[in-house]
Amino acid sequence: MELGQVLPIALAGLLAVALLALLRRAGATVARVREVEGFRHAVSALEQEVDRQLGGWIERIDAVRRGQAQPGEVVDDFAAALRTLDGFAGASRAIETPPAFVPTQDAYTAELERAARSLAMVEHGCRVLVSAGGHHRQLEATTAIKRGYLNLLHSRTALQEHAELIATARDPLQHRWRTSRI
Image (cartoon, rainbow, N blue to C red; front, side, top):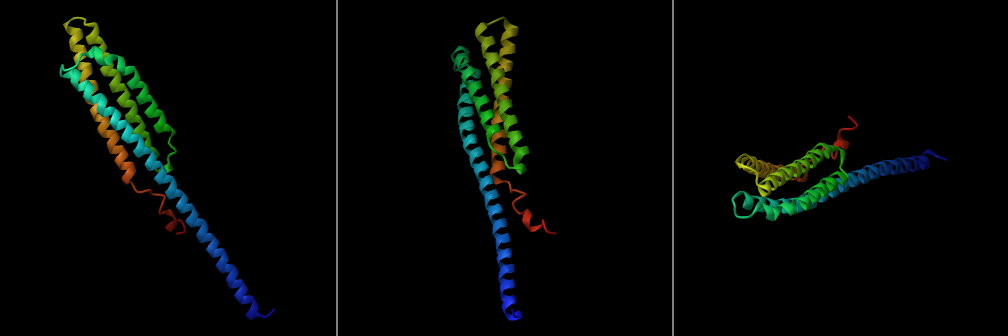
């Protein structure tokens, strides 16, 4: 074979290898973007439901705090609310998280657990008010309700901030291919 025939075949082979490498990298990038967007969508959907539930509970607790509702009316709902929050925390842990978002996702889950503890504190205060001990027990109950209420408000805000951070954060691994050869 002559050099005039071998050279085009060698160049075509080299071009095919380069094209395959480029397609492999592009496929990996597309898969990574799909994974991150799926994660963001899952967190956003969970956050909307969590925020809706917390908003309802906060309104009911505020009504008890202000004396517009009786503590006995909401005490029975706390067991279901705590189960719901535990379910949200479990759903948060079950979301497949890209490595770059693990710390933020862990913080989000920790805030869900904090919200559950806050709700348990409010439940304790309502149960004490229902059982009506003495004046000291009433102070303990109102303090527990107020602390739990404020912690629940702070948890809700922190959950919204974590979800916003996840929605807007730039994935540091997404543009890594540019520097991996340097």
